[in-house]
Image 1 (cartoon, rainbow, N blue to C red):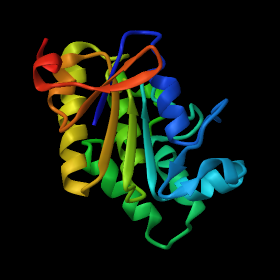
Image 2: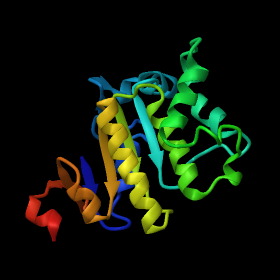
Image 3: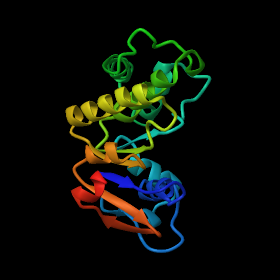
Image 4: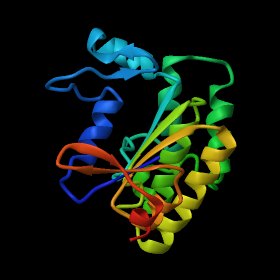
Length: 194
């Protein structure tokens, strides 16, 4: 699903609310059938653990951790003997099997975003939120990242909620909504193509 909207329309805020990263000023949000308001921050983190992945425009990698360590982060909440192998496998899937020990500053923007993709999918997430995942990339690199994101999404059978202002990207999604004046409105295929 794509959520379209102009800059400043509240797309990123909406994504933060849906993921339980931010609290609404009114209303109720449920994630996997559980009211987010009924959970404290630890409870919301526990609910997301292993079920929700994130891909951010600015990558959100920890600068002092290697690519491998960044991908291992979400697995720390569910320690398992195969976590290291899983993280290595996902980095290989995104084409970074030879860059495991590199710090983010040693990676290009496209490589950093591929680390972020591996981190989002490594837990076997049911739902991946992607907030303008190509916003900090040149068009050619952005296209490669989107191709990889959609391929990983199909392969993992994950629900993908993508926030974008790019109509071409939104057209590739099964459903498109537009955020207008704080309201979500279904878009017809013709509106998405405009």
